[in-house]
Length: 159
Image 1 (cartoon, rainbow, N blue to C red):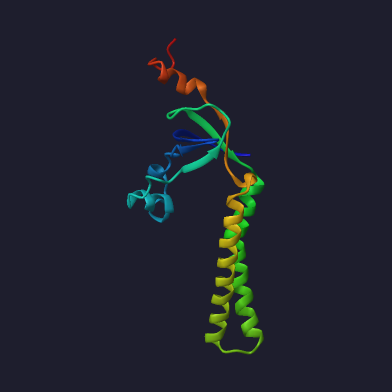
Image 2 (cartoon, one colour):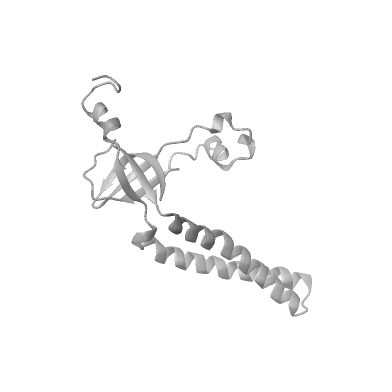
């Protein structure tokens, strides 16, 4: 199970919306100029980043700290579907056009056709998998020690 800590920002029946905590490594990273997260922060698009809907049967409130998780197999399947399948079908489309003896413009079109087929397949599978309970993040546990002190107006670390 891959875990991430976050804070509850919204409630639904049987689920919560969790804002995950930023890792805080962007300021010290040497690859900041070439990093996608650094670019998103620079463009001001980090507001919704890390907002995740997670299923739960716990009684939580907005502001509670929680740990959410998703299975490694779900993440691996999603990654293969989104990254590997389009690349493979792009190559297959281009290689088929080349094997048929077509010119370079048709090889390029064959690759684009393969990529378009993969995009449609990923889109359809993504909708199907979005409804699957195995692919959804879940709240693994509430971090009561962190949120209880705040709820009662006590400072953390003091009795």
